Length: 543
Image (cartoon, rainbow, N blue to C red; front, side, top):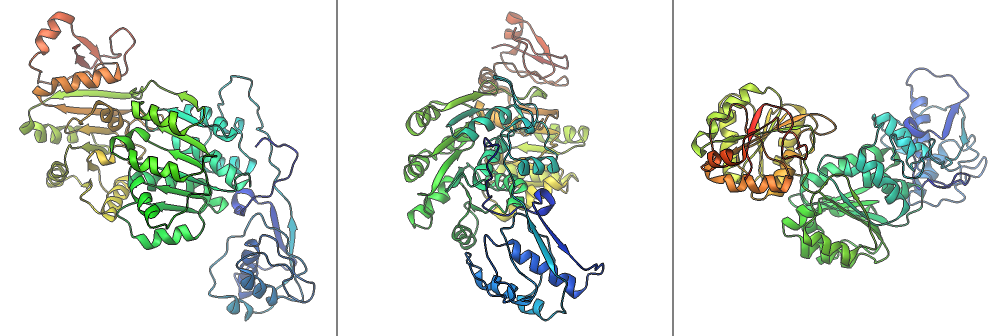
């Protein structure tokens, strides 16, 4: 935060396990989990829900309830009218066992006095301020409050990724941002942390809207935000297709801090007037190029027209097509640009391998490669029917596999993804619907049973491996007649895709090109700028 000496009262309480600013003590010493102890904890929990409620001494009558739960709070006060004297604003609730009702608590034996000591969180400047132009190497160098830093420390987040180190200060300043970064670089926290800071510091009176291309990605962004924000009682509404409408409408009625949505479902709710975007003060377009590829441009424009013009707009994309440029000119105000890697760049630690193989021989090669790699494998197929056939084949050879594509229900897709994350399924077979909707750390191999329809999709597919600083393998099957597709992919990336060291197939023109340009050795890593790949386990060619 930028204020160092002013006191800012958070909008919502923070769990004591993270930022305990309020201490609750008892004058009695009770060790057993008796009814009085449970009652004491329950009272403390109810009191922690208060914003500001004064209780008249020795009466138990609520003098100034300012919450929709005033009746329940007054009931709590009645439990101990002779003891409670004042209830000030709470910052940290106490985790308690569930109780059926306030009346049930009131029937329990008496309990000793609870003493409440109030303190207030003081926003502070980063503990290690940066020099001008310096890039943060610790979250403690970024404009984040002590409670947020404590949450990050507890979650094991220590060093920000490049996109996080550069984006968080810009987002925190309120400026519009255009971020170009490959998938798996930590973009969610790059925009999520400063948004949460603004909400819970009271600086934002509105809410944030995050648009994403797929249901899976929306659910995973919600999971990532809740991983940090649940300590601050973050309220989200996830609006996606394939899920029941009633729970989503219920989430909207709870006045969410953040709306996470796919464009299609959000437009449905706009048509029925079930959602009001007039209070949105920050819009995030995540994986914007993918949303445009999927034909969401009209829906995105309609949504942006429903949001106030006075807002912050953040756009993140792995590539920069002309449509993205058009959106930035039309809907953004002098956005600052961050380009972590050139558009189309793949991660440095991905070992790319290309096999030239006829369609009828692909399953034989797939079985052999699955036997050679014992880790988790994500297989991409071009069509839903192909994905189904590949998944059945893998299961028939004794390897647990699940499939994820648009013919599967949301529940089936979540079950497949959760099982893959947990290791129950070793292989997940997917169509491109999941190319950016799968965020699983530790995928050893991405195997493209079929090449994608576009070169950009190749980049997004292989970005599912080598995440969070790990290394990974990206294996691709190409039919001999697909040499032009391979050439287009290489042009997009700016480097060749090396043949696997044990590849036996070849393209019809490979011999001619090899004779004219020579063969290069490479391990599938990124080029060195001289038309060569680093390493030495594969062969490549120039077109």
